[in-house]
Image (tube, rainbow, N blue to C red; front, side, top):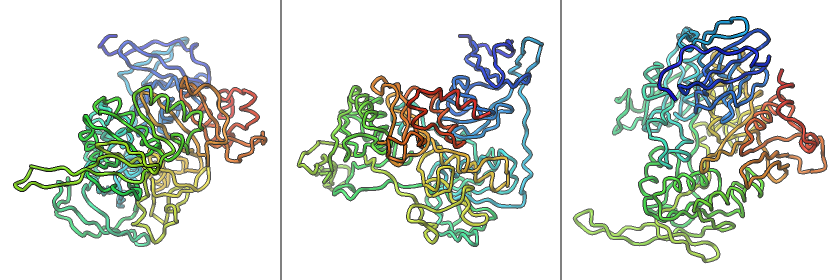
Length: 559
């Protein structure tokens, strides 16, 4: 490989079928993506701006180019961002058609400038600095919003990529600065008034007004002197996220018991777990990711995962897939105790010499199970789910989230996004606590504020999430009530499968359509499924059992 940058590349037009795409890896590690429609060609940076995946190994369905890793989606004609998890569109290169060949000039980029002249005399206030809040502000600025934007966050850090805390940060594979969304100067570069360490104590939706309480002891980056401030908005976005659920276990408040939600949480766990016996309570994807990340870091004495269910991720994948995940973890040194209830987190008394007077304090000593078994531990990590932070909108709450429409609107000019939103969408009304869904919410809400009808609402989007464990990425599209009504293709033990899930519970109903699918190693098939689900043409039991070509089906039906 050379370090020299390649500026001009010659490509044969015959290599690219009409309606298709092809990527070309260069010696300087760059990738060029060419899309073709009859005699019309376009050239782009072929690395997904989210994590650098080769977009040419994804799938093109109609005018949608879908990334194979995390399903970020771009317009094949101009590179416009259609779906997160990426937050930017593709860089487009100038090209010259020389008859049988194309000359791509990567140093000559198509200039797509945006004039921030829309709604210039308005003020948008966003409550919450997570994925949904960030994406709302980011997409507003990227698509021409010229008004004031205030983003209020109780966190002490600018918006960052929370999923990577349990996937990469704990493993020691990614430093803190790489997790910042939009870079270290994102707020300044986008003229966004970012207020950190501030708590919103009250929201009046009908008046589009809120009350803000500042932490006077914090190092806030703006408006340090504001306290108990009333702010009015033309557009109000509430995206307060969720908080870890603490189970009613005796000892859950001891020193040495941790949850993982924030960067500060991750730093504490990282420091506290060195040479320690770690017990993780919970077998969902957070518990499994934390186990994987700490094992990869290689700094703990031992790791034991305790779960109530007899299998891991039991609300997501079938028993067969679950067993394959357990095997993967056990091969990497993780111990499992399944089908077990934790009665108590036990304590030991320690002496402290850190002050003038010796003090006695209680610290974790282990966990005691309902059957009387005791597991020694120095720290305990709770991966026992989260609860939506709906308190600010409690007067309009559903019992399971804030009911909003497919544009995330609660009232005229008022939006509820992310984990708190029970939104109407393509698959019905539901509340989903996943990062990519929150980013979708931000994009849709921003487009609604701008009254941009070219951007699809939730009626044309499907949920997606992924979990990374020991370098293997399990990906999931759609939503199923249970993973137990399924059709499994492939071999999970070799980490090569796709599994389709059905909501009807009737295996004899050949015409029933799948509502979700998960995979390890079959990325194009999952993309094809998601695209078919999006347009209401998810495969039936009969089609899946007959071995039909789902990739070709998605391409044909997406035209």
